[in-house]
Amino acid sequence: MLNKTLAGLVLGAGVAFACAQASALTIGFSQIGSESGWRTSETASIKAEAEKRGIDLKFSDAQQKQENQIKALRSFIAQGVDGILLAPVVETGWDQVLKEAKDAKIPVVLVDRGVAADPSLYLTKVASDFAEEGSLAASWLAAHTNGKCDIVELQGTVGSSAAIDRKKGFEAVVSNFPNMKIIRSQSGDFTRAGGKEVMESFLKAENGGKSICALYAHNDDMALGAIQAIKEAGLKPGKDITIISIDGVPDIFKAMADGETNATIELNPHLGGPSFDAINAAKEGKEVPKWIKANGPLYLPDTAAAEYAKRTAK
Ligand code: AHR
Image (tube, rainbow, N blue to C red; front, side, top):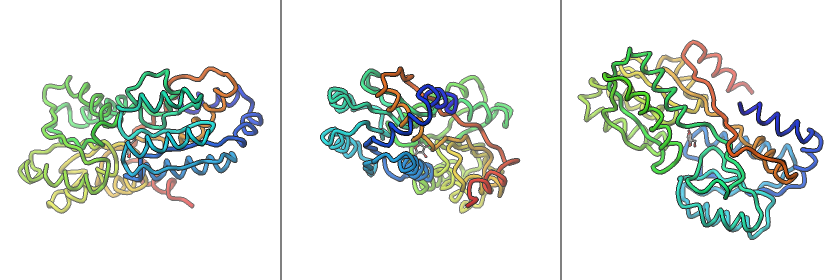
């Protein structure tokens, strides 16, 4: 889906022309922080793509704070950048600053997460469908457990579109199975340490983990922290407790190849290309779709070792 849309944008403009345009651009990028392996890859990928295109990328790390992102956006607007990439930490509270960007005629591309603001306030969103990821995770789990499973859930950052929609999509499918239920659900803030800490409390509250059939983690880093907690509790992750998570970072493939987790859904971190293409297309007066989708596949242990090798090859 992503490649198709990207191809449409690039082919429409002509590759050489698109690259020539891109070389003149100054783009501001407000990143959330570096809470997960996936986010670190996304940052590196967007920086590399900007460099490849000769874009002057002004990077700002918000350290997980929305107020820092709003400050960064205002500074980009004051500098008169050609476009802004915003990875919004939470869904709400963006209307005013997005309106300021719009008034200054600076297109804003939302990367990887969404906002609750009026869509006319931003150019496009380059992101996966988080609800679809949640329903894919639940469908796989239902098939894997014959529709009978007591689940614990590690949610992502409270108020983020990734956590809200991954929960929604998962619950919608689970509600069709009378013998599947979420018995505990708490945020681990998308971090490895948060996943470990919350999983420890789940294990304690659930008979040392014996009454837990499966863990659904909104990202791989929290699953990796939980794997550690499960091992320390004397259980076998991936066997005594089935685990499914989202992102597809190299470490989860290693854990899967070692039999310690069962499935992951890939989230594409290479969002810079389609974001820059969208800004170029808008500058040329072209129509840009409001959502450029970037959903990835579900991976299982049979290909985990090969995927790990592929993703860690120099
Ligand atoms: O918004 C995407 C999510 O944010 C990723 O799944 C997670 O790892 C992250 O930090």
